[in-house]
Length: 218
Ligand code: AP5
Ligand code: MG
Ligand code: ZN
Image (cartoon, rainbow, N blue to C red; front, side, top):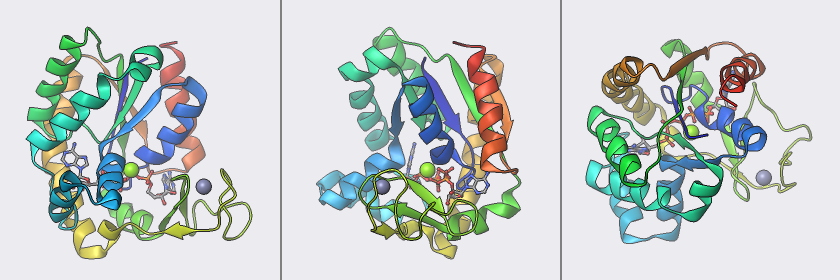
């Protein structure tokens, strides 16, 4: 299966992606995660991306298109399928993705759109913390680790908060995404690929809606 999960910042893309990757065996391709890995390594691409990410702006298309094109061409994607998270994020990227997939003789099977009330996003994002070792995502109220200060997935006790999760940047991320994602959604609705799930409820409720949408594709 080849999937794309979309939704505003804090909608729960990464959270639902953890379940989808585990239960459906597809490869998680998150442009945000790829940029954060590059920033951590201090590569020239990472340093360039940081100037945009820290302001909550989109990284220029030529950079983002390039890393997605390279990643989707890898053998593990051909073998297992993919779950794109955070790409395409504007109309140009949606058209570009079609071009990339067509060159690789692949196609998208479905777009999962997490619909969420924008008013709850700041609380979601400000409470988020992430395992430094394995990347599992938690929330100080909505998704606490089973054992305090210990990652459920890998057992590590080292967490961090994202540098772009400060209030000023979050507001800008939400605003830009609202504007840029509308034409992307329209693009995929016209292709009858969209499965919209309710993202303002609990994590478990959203997960069961995502599973119902994906199980008909299997
Ligand atoms: P990216 O990393 O993609 O960030 P984002 O889109 O802002 O989305 P988030 O990762 O913040 O939210 P999420 O939907 O994954 O939520 P999560 O599951 O963690 O991109 C970062 C930056 O990189 C961009 O701003 C841009 O600069 C750049 N970039 C990336 N892609 C790009 C592209 N294509 N083009 C150009 N630039 C690009 O959940 C959030 C929190 O809420 C967690 O704590 C979670 O535990 C909790 N939670 C989740 N679901 C629920 C629920 N149902 N109820 C209660 N709590 C919940
Ligand atoms: Mg995410
Ligand atoms: Zn971990």
